[in-house]
Length: 287
Image 1 (cartoon, rainbow, N blue to C red):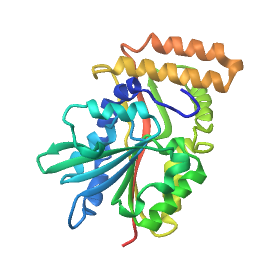
Image 2 (cartoon, rainbow, N blue to C red):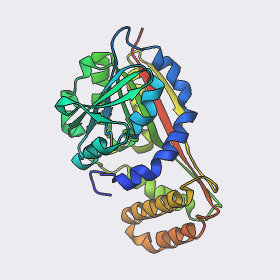
Image 3 (cartoon, rainbow, N blue to C red):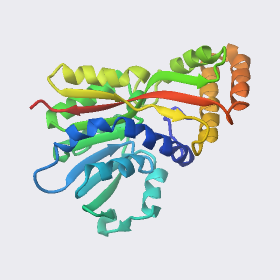
């Protein structure tokens, strides 16, 4: 991955089924959000770092009713993929629409750099700002900017699938902890939004909001990758290779040790398992 963490569409497609299953674990956060439904008109939602739309595909049916989404990403290639997705029709002005039983979901795509353009987004007109797998890539200063914008606009936040540093491989390997430490150190590098908070990110944002009276709830949303689940072997392979690449970059002197760990992991994908810790955050303004 590059410094700007441009996740390609293949990786997004590979992880989406595991994201979906993990988010069902944190769905207990949703009733409090659903209670914020606008009294009239559609939900107005901003999706940060939208990729190819996995966040909308999961969240829109749970919100229900008519919705208007502004989906934001810096990668024009990922934004272009939206128009080719099944179920969307093109409307004038570049708007896409998907018709649901309880109301249409309209989508407007917007290319922006979240480092520079966060304040330029229409916070005051949004009911919800959301993202998936984003917070852990951000630095503390960016997270505090996010909190300040939410407070000023009283916009609800829902940030899903933020890594919390837990990796549990089965069967265990003597070098699991070593590789995990190198990988964790690599996660704290600047990904384009300042020196990343990594596993601390959700708690950093939660603390900043709670300090000013916001109602914040956290819920685990772990990936569970085990034999018998479709895509499990490919996902374990991608995780082992990705962690090894980052760990070797973080500690070049240990590259041979990391490669050997990766090779052992790849030999076990057919019968191995992996749990990756994530946490979801819901933040609502003070009553």
